[in-house]
Image 1 (tube, rainbow, N blue to C red):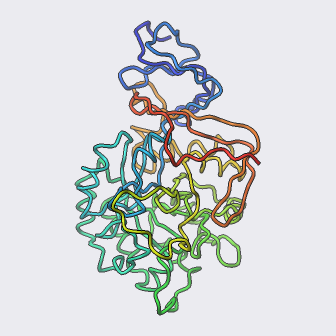
Image 2: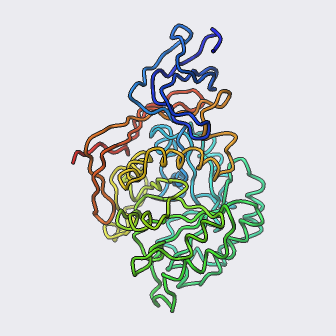
Image 3: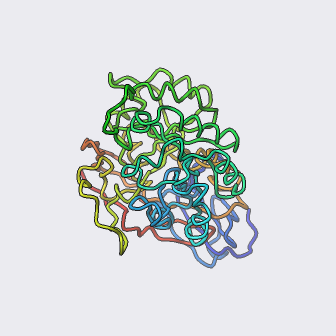
Length: 425
């Protein structure tokens, strides 16, 4: 039993699910001084300054989005506001995938990490320029644009916010430079002792000279041998060439062996996601470890900030365009609509994600003494339409939507303008 000392807040009567702590049941959660002070079947209401009734809702460890783009302004249309993607979408930790580089990391720390109410960490770009709008400027992403020593040094000097390395294995880069950039990224990961998160699926488009003899279907098989256990294969369900599913509609044979060797898979949902290809991969036994939403300014239709140049003339035909509004909880709902259970999906955005970041002792769990990073979700039942960027639709019988979150005990309502509304089927 808890003592009778005052709690700042009690979350009362929700279904508390914490895979790391082995908790799944109706519980009360008491918060004091920004930390979790109690998780019990019942906590006296009189022992708290405030009681919030969360009955009928899910109470989870603070959600972790393992694939975000939040280097706002610096990464052009890609960069969203960290708190819009984070605490105002019910997410307490976001991982910027490849926005900052060894050159731009100080700015990322000062202008994004430090002012954000959300916990923000990053996978450092393998490229010196970082995550600019590479689909317009692919020439910046050649092997000459990678500085192994400088990137390793930056990663080691900023362990608090650099949790991995971001690289791209896609046909546009291979057609220009072959596999050398990926070899260098893998070297950075080994020397920095950090996981490498590898994007699969066409990204930058082919050069004018064409594919130069490269075959997108060979990329996965050539890249995986370079990687080490703990490295992350991203976009398993991509609709673009060069992903887990080859042109014959089969999952590459090397994927299962890679997972058996300790490599991990992140959904990286965003505009790459295909329900059709997800069904193929899931049926082949490829269940992702983590679930990044991969929201950015192209696939969420966020109005550009004042002073931003007019949109590129071919924007309406750009392959990134897709969801008008999106969220991590919508991505969770997508996975459940494909047949995964809630109990399978919750670890993807909590303890599995924390392990990917090497932060399992800090985040991803509800436990007494831990920071009160808690996400409270609506768990709606009915028939809801979800769609992907191939214009495929699925009907979900369960829809998760964020209600609010606590970040170190401070409440933030889920009021981000990018949050989607439920669409009945």
